[in-house]
Length: 195
Image (cartoon, rainbow, N blue to C red; front, side, top):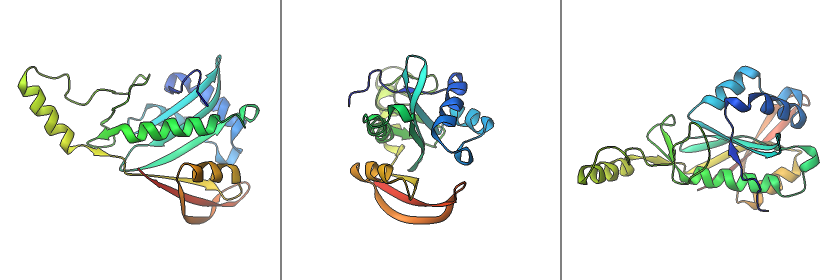
């Protein structure tokens, strides 16, 4: 499925839309607090994307950025499910994770361009200085940067459609965590994808 419009980076300006979206998609016990979302949307070591139908947030996905990235959330409004939106959003998130480069998780930049307030799409140091000095500095920086090597996620054991989606993208089941989810209490299936 082609996304139209393409996913956009969610920021603190989208807080109310994100909170409303989460209330419609996730059980109350799985919803994050307002304070958690404020921290998530302003953190440099997290990236969250959303898709909109006019001004309504219809799908969202997010991940932490580190050598082992963690898919923190992914969901689609019930009335938009079954259209390939979750798969397309997951593919976009994985593409972004593959492009992430960092010294520490709070110093992330991306090799692919996309819209966002706190996102760097140019290599660190690429615009500093002039002449040959810049080229040598950039090469040295690029060699020392880290990248995401694996992606993990947790999913409710009863969510067969999500487990199938992740499996279709190459994720493998690596563990189960009893009573990970609350209300209703349920085990999580932990899945991993090597990049």
